Length: 414
Ligand code: 9YW
Image (cartoon, rainbow, N blue to C red; front, side, top):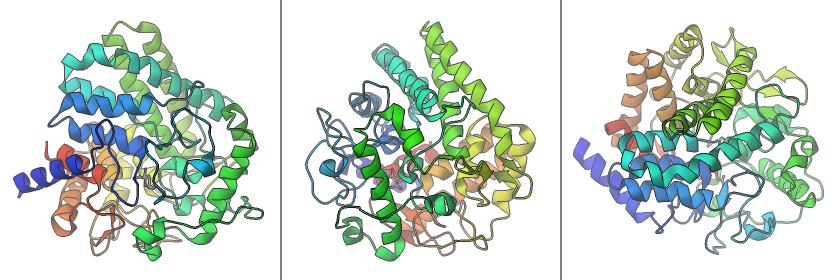
């Protein structure tokens, strides 16, 4: 079974390979997505490490001069996706979106180079590029110098319609947006996707930022949606630490020091997001200064950073207590807003499982990590390489032949 799963996963990565980048799945997502690509490289490294490095290099070839790395690169025209390049209107040589995504690149590069040290010289420019992205986060998304960065659009979290955003999203209006036609609901079951009301708010934010000509230093303060997501910050912290090690091994001491300083600031600030009542971290709404009372996989994913051992142990117990057949539900049954099949409001996502399992293992929570891995492989066995899965019955949902799901399977089986 294991060999068959491995072969099937490699086939999917090859089917979705467009030469220098990989699409998440054909049809639904016909471009390059930021964190998808970095995690995809982790799968590709098992059969073609130079190609894996190309995946990350291609993404960073489209980094903006300010340091931001966009969440989508529109390499080829395809009107099967909304919102396309005309809606973003970012005026880049190759069109991109104007917001970003969870910064897994530093982590992914380190893991890739650990297994393929011969690629180190070729990867040297990336170390400076990824550091510039990390600096951009702290400069533009933490104007108060708190140590933690905010997302200004739910799409930046990668957990688009999580219950976590429901309250801050109330502050985003829907009036005045241009009429539009969604494409996602033509590829996937609308009952498993975000609602029209959520799409209206997503687009209102895009139009707001577009009116400011995508000057990224203005957008944080201009956004009615400013949320500090602990999982997002854990990814940034972990990437800073991993990239610091890569930089130090290359003799790039200044870049190493910059990354360590940013990681330390984040680690010092994270405990303020801990909730003893929920046994995990919570999001902070910068609009109100309050924690958002919504336990989600974003708060569990915080274990991806080197958090205190007692917090990691509690997160392991919280995951174990989820009343689902499969782990890890993005929101657990019984919590407000849970919906077993609707995208990030309940379903299991293998990329999140992978990072949670990695963090648990590093924290010494081996049994809990193994359970998350076993649940992930069981889902593949039962339902194939889907975009996401119902945590109760394991049904595969959303797009099929999904790239990052396949990549994670290669990592789980390694
Ligand atoms: C969209 C590509 C992306 C992921 C996101 C996921 C989804 C795209 O798909 O967003 O149009 O809603 O939420 O995390 O990067 O796989």
